[in-house]
Image 1 (tube, rainbow, N blue to C red):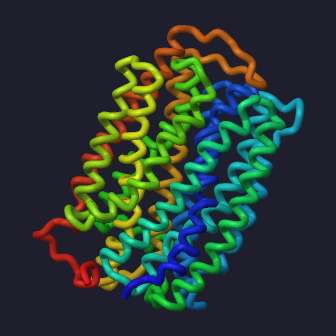
Image 2: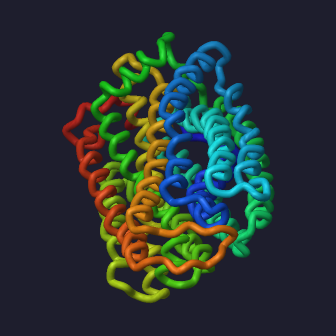
Length: 441
C-alpha cells in the first residue's frame, strides 16, 4: 500500500517545528551560556547534560504508555497534543531575567530546558512511531521518512540560518525575540502534524501493538534485539557527533575564522544541500540498501570532520561543510527509516511494540544530543576557555584555541568511527539474512 502524498506532506510538516527545537538549543545554547550569561564552560556543559538524563528514563516510559494508549483508543494523538506547549518552554529558556548570570542563569536555563525536553518527548515519541503503525512495506517506509526528513531539513535549515542572524547582537533581548518568533513556527507545525497523522492512519491503515507489557519488559525486548541494539548504539555515537558539530560551530567561526556571522552561512551550507540530498539518498537506498548507505554517510563524515585541521580559508571550509551536510542527510534518513524495519522484524517474531522501540530510540537520540555539547564544553574547559557576558570580547589563551579546534575535528571523527563500527553489526539488509516478507512487499 502507498501513502497518499497530501497525507504524507501534512504529517511531515510536523518535522519543521521539530527541526527548530533540535537546532536552536544545540546550536546556540552553549554559546548563549558562555558568551552572554557568563556561565563557565564546565557548568554550561552540565546545564545541557543533566536535563537529558531525565530523558533516558522518560522516553521509554512514554513509548510504552503510547503503545497502551494506541491499543485502547486506536491512535497516539493524546500524548502528542501535550507537545504543542513546547513553544512556551522554548521562549522561557532564552528569556533570562536581567541580572541573572553565572550559576543563577544556568539554573534558569536548565529548568526550562527540562520542561522543554519533557514536552518534546510527548510530541516526538508518538510522532516518530507513526510510520511503524502504518500497514506499509520496506521501501514505502523509506519514502515516508524521506519526505519527513525533507521537511525536517527545511526546519533545521530555516532555524539554523535565522537563529544566528536574529541573535547577531549578542544581547539577551535578541535571544528572547528569536525564541518567540521561532516558537510560533513550532506551534503551527505541530497543529499540521496532528491533522496529518489523523489522515495517515485513516487511509493507510493503523496497526496497533499487540498485548500489554510493562516499560521494563518493553525495554528488555528492545535490548535483546541484536539488530535494533546495533542500530541504537550506532546512532548514539552518530547523534553525539552531529550535535557536537552544531554546538562547536559558533566557536569555530568566531575563534578560528574570526567572523561569527559565518555561523548562519555555514548552517545554510550544511543544511541547504541536505534538502536535495535526501531524495537522492532515497534512490541510493533502493540500489544498495539502507545499511550500506548509512555506512557510506558515516565514513564521509569521519573524513570531513578532520578536514579543518588543514587550516584552509572560508571558501574551502564552506565546501567541506556542504559535503558534511550531504552526509548528514544520509545519516538521518537511513537511521530513522531502519527503526520501522527493526519493528517489523520484531513483529514477525511476535513482539509488536512499536512505541517501546521508538521510546528507546528517542531516549538514545536525546542522550546523544546532550553528550555532544557536553564533550565539547569539557574540551573547552580543559583548554582554559574563558566565559564572558553579553557578547563581550575577551582574549583567549592559546590552549583554548587548540582545544576548540581539536574538539571540532578529531573528537567528532573518532566518535563517528565508533558509530560506524557498531552499524556494521546490522544484519537485516544482508542478502543471507532471513528477513520477514513484510519488510519487502
